[in-house]
Image (tube, rainbow, N blue to C red; front, side, top):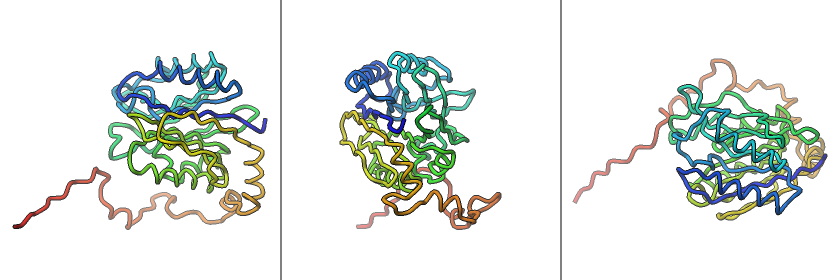
Length: 289
């Protein structure tokens, strides 16, 4: 199969509440409207919002509801992410569920949005999974995209599509649109970046192709984003370059440099001088008459 249809659901949902009933209805409507769709991708933390107090173990009840929904509709389903409790630790975790309702992968967000996403532990592993007969898919969550090593590692693992649920309600969404295109270009991947709307996010989801081309950029409101991913086209871009131009994955593969920042024990004097990772402090203004 050289094409695969993904629906990204940019949903307007409430924060700090159980949104599953609304999400379930929207997923069912998407499949009913577009019977040929193969996969649904939801925004980060869309089920309960951004409160770690809703964390559950995995497997768990919240994840199981999505497994049952995927099996009911016969689709691949990525329910954004859920806060996962593992002992004393909490992770921001994205499960990937196949059409039989089985969890085939779980990815723990490697870069929580510090210093704001406090109390959330960092994952330690880049995760990708195979859709048999189609392609390998990688998972990254929100702030992970700001670190080029994440998508590069997924591409190195063989991922041709990166599924990127996000939850952004701040002014830097414009920067993330640029980063989505940049990651797609550098790694010759489809980047499927789905944000929330309403109380949770500012929308503006984006799907970019292997040359950084924009397949779709959403508005700020509820939107169902249906895209057909052409894997034969992507593979041709990787082999011959986008429009016959650069072949960055081959150049990365063939370059002899062992990058200094990644060597064991390497330190950067410049980065060490930046100080601790902490929230900005307000200025103390001295007013004079």
